[in-house]
Amino acid sequence: MSELYSGKEGTTHLVMGNEAIARGALEAGISVATGYPGTPSSEVIERLAEVAGEAGIYTEWSVNEKVALEVAAAASFAELRAIAVMKQNGVNVAADFILHLVLSGTRGGLVLVSCEDPGYLSSMNEGDSRTFARLNEIPLLEPGDFQEAKEMTKWGLELSEQIGNLVLLRSVTRLSHASGDITFGPVPGERSQARFRHEGAMFDPKEGPVLSLGFRHRDVQEKLKKAVALFEDSPFNTYEGPEEPELLLITSSACSLYSREAVAVLGAGDRVGLLKMGTTWPLPPDLMKKNLSRCDRILVVEEVLPFLEDNVKILAAEMAPEIGIKHFYGKKSGHVPSTGELNPDLVARALSGLLDLSHEPVPPEYKGKADALALSKTPSRGITFCPGCPHRASFWSI
Image (cartoon, rainbow, N blue to C red; front, side, top):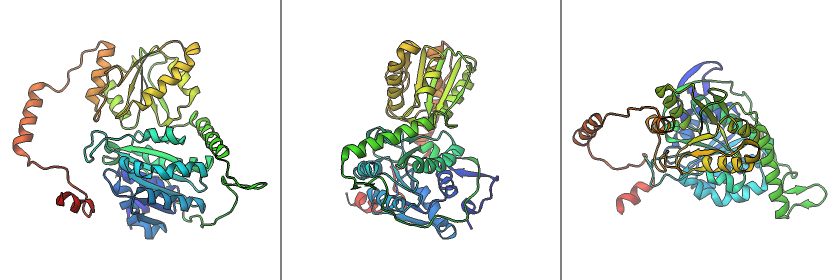
């Protein structure tokens, strides 16, 4: 029996980030897990498939990502909890169905897990699926460490049931494929039985089937307001640092780990306030107003698009009469690279420039020696494909 399923409540285990997501789904009592393979997302379904028989859940590698979400949605309509898992490219494939799904609404908890690849380490691009949350008006969650990956998956399924709609959970390579200790919670012994009822987002008891698109769109926005109210008190949003810092650093996802390390390396804990956001769309306005009021200079640290940066700026502009004018730094200002992965050194470089601190990055002579050894001592090899990937044959034929 797999430890991922049999591990007892309260025990600590070293797991990969994707395994933490899988454990969170098990603890939430999912009945269906679907996906389409693609690094860095594949291990979520692989691990759930290994325990499917013991756990009494249905797992499926679907024909494509759209079908994966459709199958998971069917389970949700039957009041079963389900997850659909894919990489960032796959969210584009599923996008057509997402638009229709959010208008119809859900019943059982339904979470779309997008594991993304900043720096395109195993992809042809470093696409950012967070914009789909704003486009489709659904909540976006971003775990900042391994324990949060587990807890947030479980909470995302609960949140989906509370608002009656899809929830998007975003991981990145350095979280999905790194490993860390997590504490297991309980796994429910029994799961819900599938049942279908006529009442729901598409049915009005007085008028019958609801065909008005305006009504359905308005319903989506009301559901989003419920999520925002819950985000205000979410334990996944945390602040650490002085009450009135010189600089407020706002971050999310794996960048919160880089940011904490950078602040510690620079010894700037008494000068920098660190606001780690786990609920990144929509941003909870009261929480943001409280923290944006702490100081006039804000650095936003995130990977790929300036999604968080843009949304923070919009809120700050709306709140300007109450919190004053703020000075923002991030991708737009050039303090944070606009492409590729981040790391503690890049964050420390941005902080040292803004705080007038000295920071010694990796010495050039060390980097030069390491690069030379890498070229001379390691074999040259391009990006490969996962074992069994059907695209292998296409690649080699081309």
